Image (cartoon, rainbow, N blue to C red):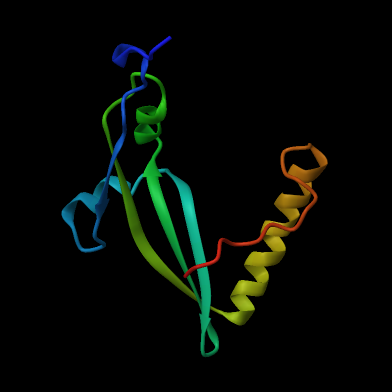
Length: 114
């Protein structure tokens, strides 16, 4: 049976916003992180996070909308000592999530960047 065009879910268009744009102010509210990339340069660690506002998450629900803005809001830079503290704190939360069955036991690998 051929698919009817009306049965297909609407496509979501994603629009990126630059750090300097006025629209970034929309992201200065509780946000959902949907992308993280971290790397080391010298003695510092850099972390980029792609953010959606909580309200924009509704666009991914059926009938939610046709455009979602994703902001690379900021580049976070920290020392190795701060990174170690962040790692320990995140690992405590991860262990709690793991004990609740919300994350897998396997070690997660970051996607390879070409």
